[in-house]
Image 1 (cartoon, one colour):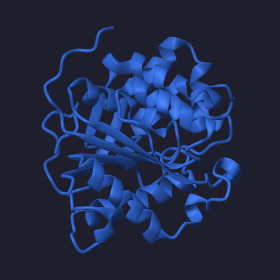
Image 2 (image 1 turned 60 degrees about the horizontal axis):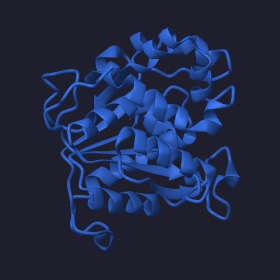
Image 3 (image 1 turned 180 degrees about the vertical axis):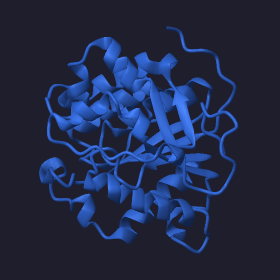
Length: 260
């Protein structure tokens, strides 16, 4: 399927815990924005920039039309050797992580920032929860000239969204995750302010997910679980992305796009 031509969309910065989160949670929206000519970038909190996961991330972002990876280089909470010699993200001083994110926000100068929800997504991974917390703080600090002045000139994005999953949208995902012993944490449907149909970008999104080859080859990670599904079932799962607006501002008139 050839994606439709789009009117310009706001520039977008995704801030996520691990390589592959960007593709799984917002791959369609990233591809959609890039197709419209908007600048798109992703900050990834964990794994070393010289790791195999960093190479996979670069390949995924290329598929999605985003800029080169921006990696904070902390260790995954559950894989300490993911960044040898570096602290786990969960152990790093909060102020240090916030300052790093402020620097990336001020450099990328996005209109919209997208991150994890307060649950840390469906499975409640501690790195996802931590990134949600520090992104909220960094979003507000980035526009204040006397907060982290060494991190660059102030820039205030206009909207902050959390990628999330409503109760009504986990039908296919729930048994998939519980079967391998994972949690399923979803939110009431009314918490969702934007439900984006990314079916036109499904092929891009799936190729980006598959770019994370090491995860797709394993049985428990979501890329691996999705890779073992029939195409029709997999497409049904990945063709819709849900978001909650976390900042004051208008709820989108068009529920199929993020707005500023």
